[in-house]
Length: 299
Image (cartoon, rainbow, N blue to C red):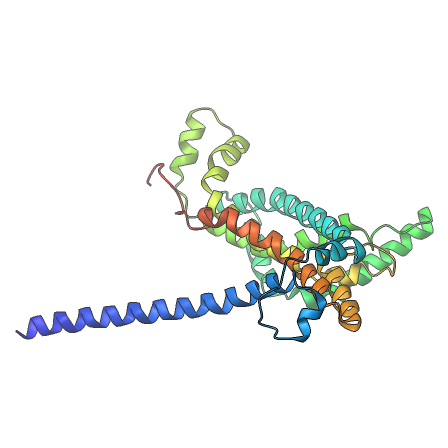
């Protein structure tokens, strides 16, 4: 009898725990979804609708806000700049981080421990604290280029900005990838070596495909970081009439539209900033939930 009561109590406790978890998840979903939905609705409202009930549904679809934000406020130009910088930074990061993480995790060589400690130490360096030294270093380099070639090169350069983005993301990316590579059994590589594959072939055709979930994860995290980055871009792209990335351009748009009371254009610009990240997450969410490896050998 007592055992039955204990079982009933345990079952009741599990049900209450599940109800609590579902309640918390539903609350979090509401907290996230409601502001995003409100921004999308506000982006298609006419300016006069903002002076009434802010929670009222749009009276129609006013797409002129997006046209004004894209062309008039140069959000289209800023978006192209951000796409270029983010894509280039991701390519540079993957080309450097994937082989580096593989070597640090799977190979033994002199200086390996020192490199691991150095990259680990990079995790504790806040990028915002080293923006000024980076700027001063690039400015001094530009002074040298100007005295030598008569023009600057390092500041207000999207390619250099992409390199800085990739460099600042290396510690976290290498730490995450090397931690995953270290969990893989060496049987995969031994089987490839027996079949005549070299180190590069084994790394590219065997190990990297197995690391697909981890690679997608670091692509998503770094994409969000690069796409939304503001401090480095504002500091290194400091020319008054120079190029801008989307976050810096959007801040300028917010300041301009708030003073002009053009709220619809401002929210349309915010939608343009958010939309790529939402699309990317929708495309890769299944891969993010995959297991570490599917099939293969067991050590």
